[in-house]
Amino acid sequence: MAPKLFTEVVLEFFIYALIGWLWETSLAAVKQRKFVDTGFLLGPITPIYGFGVIGVIHLLRPWQHHLIWLFVLATILVSALEYLTGSILEILFHIKWWNYENVPGNIQGRIALPISLFWGICCVLIIRFVQPEVVKLISWLTQFGFILPVVLIALASFDFGFTLANLQSFRQKLERLNLAIEERRNQLSSDVADLKTDVHESWADFLKRKPQLQARLTNLNFGQRHLLRSFPNLRTDNADVTKRLDEIKELIAALLKRD
Image (cartoon, rainbow, N blue to C red):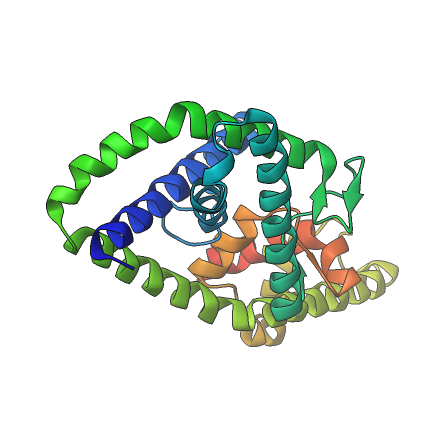
C-alpha cells in the first residue's frame, strides 16, 4: 500500500470511528438523560464504525453511483461485519455485548433486519454527503504527513491492549461478585428468620457485618467498570450473572465507596 493511500485509509478509519462513537454516545445520552460513554475502548472511537465505512468506501466503490446497489450491498456488508464481530467477541470472552432478540427479524440477537436496513441507508447518506467533506478534511490533515496516522495507531493499539487485558478477568470478577450476592441472600434469609437484621439492609451495612467477605472481594477496575457502563445490557453464559446485573452494579458501587 502506497504511503499516501495508507495515510488516507487510516485517517478515514479514525474519523468514522469517532463519528460512530459520537452517534452512539449522543443516542445513549438522550435516552438516559445523562452522558454515557458507549465505547468498547476507553478512547472516543468505536472501531466497528470505522471498519464498516472503510469497507463501504473502498470495497463498494464500483457501485457508489448506483444508489439501489449501494444500499443493498452496504446493508449486506455492514450486517456481515456486525454479525462476525458479535460472534468473535462471544467466542473469545463468553459475553454477548449487544442483543437484538427483541427486534423483529433478528438472527441470534446479533443482527436484525430493521437495524441492518437503517445502517444501509446511513451508508448511502455517508457516501453521498459525508464522505466528500471527509475527503476535504483528510486533504488538510495530510499536511502532518506520516506522523498523525502513526500516532493514532499507537494510541489505539495501547487502548486495545489495555481493554483486552481487562477483558481477561472481567467475566471471572462478575461471577465472583455474583457468588457474593448469593451468599448475601442466604445469609439475609437466615438472619431475618432469626430477627438479627432488616431484610432491606444495604450492601454497605452488610459488608461491615461481614468483614471476611469484604476482604476477599475484588472490585472491577476502572476499565472493567467502563465496559459495564458502556454495555448495560450485556449477557454472559452464566444466566445468574445476567439476571443479577443490577445487584452486581449495587455491590460494585458499595465496594467503590469502601475503596
